[in-house]
Length: 290
Image 1 (cartoon, rainbow, N blue to C red):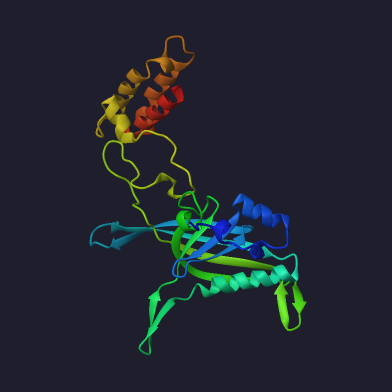
Image 2 (image 1 turned 135 degrees about the vertical axis):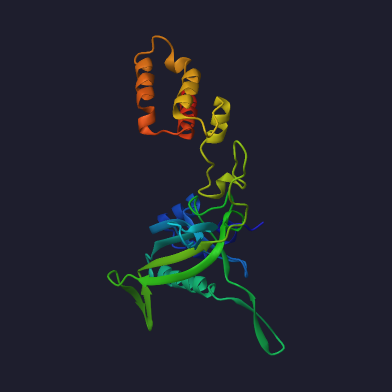
């Protein structure tokens, strides 16, 4: 099955025998674009010059007479990726290939049309899958299975005028091109958290950056184990914690342990720790002991 540029790319796309070409392809440091309507793939060496991955939560706000704060309802969370990369050329041949690949990517920004009966109608919008190492990835595999679905909002083509051009009769071939894109991600799996004492992520934890979440206990679960309800006072929560930590962490003879607990007790109300915050401390203390 064709899944990535390693299956589909021709030697011409990484021609010239340059060491950075071999490193890019062999090490997976390649920016891959998969054009969903046509199945075409175009790729570039991953010489990143700028990268921003933004997550924006949107809320519908309603002003209510007499309320100091508006009423807000969650709408959605949008992920946008903005990054740029440099596309150098060591020869006129490579510079020409760079222009060809950019021309193909730019053409992918236009829709696919169905023709018939003398009329033209849009058959498919210009959707993409984008993959770059683990930073832009939905999982293992090539761009077709591990790419991130989305829309390409724009592409900027910026030849480096200081470095100049290779020249052929009637042609200017940039020695370096700076490319800039903005990409809006379309989520393809369940997002958000479940409910209960120990809520779990509804989808695949490795959906971003190819890594899972760190281990940890939820506040609700930790409070339940301690017998602490959300309305428990700080002093009562402290007593419950003292009972739990009366083992290894506060064992008799542990230097300073009792003094530390007494200091915490004396300042607990003043500091204003809540029962929930205390439960987090307990959970972290347990992890440290393990």
